[in-house]
Image (cartoon, rainbow, N blue to C red):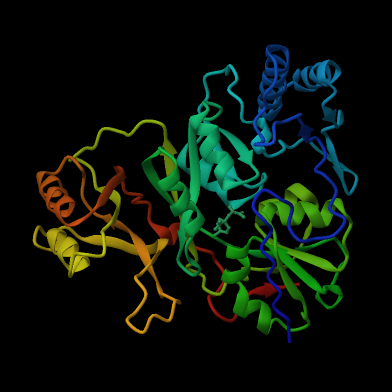
Length: 421
Ligand SMILES: O=C(O)C(=O)C[C@]1(C(=O)O)C=C[C@@H](O)C=C1
């Protein structure tokens, strides 16, 4: 039986895998203790040169990015790998490296294409969602969710496309927390059928695999299938993103490790598909939201969704019931409700004076409903909600993704029959 060993990497650091080399093509820019690129004006300009050249290098057919990187390196001693062309199993891959926190200083942007930040590496599902949301855009990989938020805030990207929930794994709470901490607006949603494959280096068999690595959501979505898979007896470990896991196995020539990722990741990183369609349910869908610096104008002539977050102080009674009634009485359908602890409140010590006063959590409630902010029913409902709550924020009002899921749902059968080689 497989031993489940999910190790969540500390935020901003590499996952718990030993001997992981820095990614080729990565730029290490001198930074302040806070991680921001600072110093005198020359340093700042140099940092901007590094960033703008890095963004230039992100463009699929960029020709001058490497020269600019070399110039930047010469001027401030930044540690650079001047050979950003990856060679995996003999084939050259020129793939953009994910943005990191240190890359996030403002830089002049060129070109007219929409730049869309996503978390992960090329081949990640988030990249596919970005392309679905904004066909023809420039997808910018970021190494963390927070970097994608900051890329938009700092005008390095125009939009971010980030996962918020999955039909098997549930809410992606990290992004809900970030939505609250940042000031971006939800301007759209996109639902993506997620079809996972088990990938390994060519020639590796399931029996050789002692470890399966992937994004925690992907591991969760394949949990039962992996446990049941004949010939596989492997521990599981969390990685930053699915495609990054595939790249890690390939770049380090690991013959005892498999990755859960997309078939596109297999192609990009020279991996073979050991088993196809290994998600626990064929209707596995992840919902992504599109984020922008400005909200869009809500409309009434299209099916719209609105997302809000609210909190209430502990004095009120039946607050949740009252809030939900504000929508129910106006025939507004809710599509989602979720709660997140906001911060623990220490209550007064009890009469016995034990000194160990219990903590009670304060919650943030996230609600999505099927109506536009332009709808008078919604405005009345929100006015009422405001009376019962101590905090209310509209995260966005945006067109619903109406694309039929059936068209994109994974082709292999749900629970039992993944196809395996
Ligand atoms: O790792 C990736 O490929 C991602 O795009 C992230 C992510 C997620 O965060 O849920 C996106 C879709 C799938 O649900 C699995 C992983």
